[in-house]
Image (tube, rainbow, N blue to C red; front, side, top):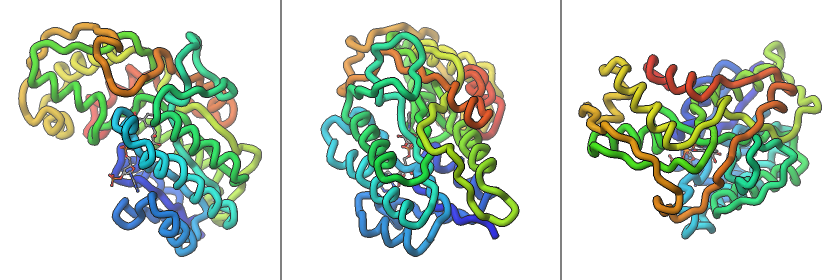
Amino acid sequence: MKPTILLTGKTGQLGSELNRLLLRLGEVIAPDSDDLDLREPDKIRGVMRDAKPQVVVNAAAYTAVDAAETDEANARAINAEAPQVLAREAQKQGALVVHFSTDYVFDGSKNTPYVESDSPNPLNAYGRTKLAGEEAIRNSGVAHLIFRTSWVYAMHGRNFLQTILRLATEREELKVVEDQTGAPTSAKDLAEAATAILKGIIPATDGSLTFPKISGTYHMTAAGQTNWYEFAKAILEEATRAPQDLPWLTSATNGRPIISSRVLPTSTQAFGSPAHRPAYSVLSNARLLEGFGVTLAHWRTQLHRCFCSSNC
Ligand SMILES: NC(=O)c1ccc[n+]([C@@H]2O[C@H](COP(=O)([O-])OP(=O)(O)OC[C@H]3O[C@@H](n4cnc5c(N)ncnc54)[C@H](OP(=O)(O)O)[C@@H]3O)[C@@H](O)[C@H]2O)c1
């Protein structure tokens, strides 16, 4: 018997990849935000009780970092209160919760990769609500895997890759922030890594689940590090070399040629986003490797693969 997996956020960057991959592991029930609005706790309880999942994969989130500054109550409902309800229900039902969190739980004052035991200190509302979600899951006593990731991009959705490609068709010169360091991570690689881990802990034979002493928080990002300015330059390098008929690329550029010939570095202060962001948010993935033998490719490799494929 295959396990039942309840997936939230199936329209998102990560959720859409998971929706495809998790089918290999079990029966996937994936309500969209119309069927299950995570701001409605009773709805969450109802879906959990009807679905009786063995695994809950929560890929939904309020991810608009700047908007969250003036919309923290909504962000909190989705990023903190909903995970708490999911976790409490899952705990009662003996299910495993797989949840995703962010590098923005840290304040960026370190200059070596953050490990899971480092103290969080979010600088913005999004980070605060995501940290509250993590804590709610940990405090619920449910078996859980919390994967903290960073700078997620995909061939669709709202992300830095898409923004740079669009702007590069509109402006000859782009100014991009150079003083934030992190690890851009492809949603596809992230979903593949999470699925590989789940495959290892959901025995395929009879669907009975074993959750050995794996419960906990793990960092899961691309290897290496860069800044937004270098990432933007790498995107344009790849885009100019890539087959121009790649469907996702044509869609990102709206079929228009790239005209940006110059990418210039700027500072966070000059750029002036509403939300503060950590200057350094590289996450050490050592615990992930130690616990599951899983490691993600270097960010530059992930980006390159994206431009060689119809799906990134
Ligand atoms: N994006 C990043 O750079 C980044 C960085 C670090 C960590 N993360 C974490 O990684 C995970 C996946 O992020 P992502 O980039 O894939 O997110 P995303 O593309 O923004 O997708 C968010 C998903 O959440 C759903 N959602 C939003 N509000 C909802 C609600 N009220 N009820 C139900 N569903 C709702 C959205 O549904 P609709 O499409 O219907 O709105 C969408 O499917 C999240 O936990 C995020 O915090 C992301």
